[in-house]
Length: 92
Image (cartoon, rainbow, N blue to C red; front, side):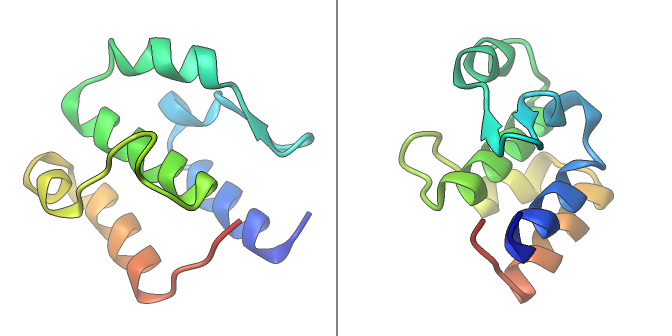
């Protein structure tokens, strides 16, 4: 596992509602279950899920993520996660 992947999974570990869609051992995510789960997540969870998948995929076109929209609704813990990432971005 790369250092960037380790950082990603450390960040993701703090979000049990989202992390179960990733397989750390195989370094994959379950796209189908992720998409189904997005439909029933709260708005804050949806923003964080899109944040994580955008970091994972290194793009935000598949699952649009807008940091300003997210900051309006996410909690302090999630804001800190995003700010920490933006200060030192990495790409798993």
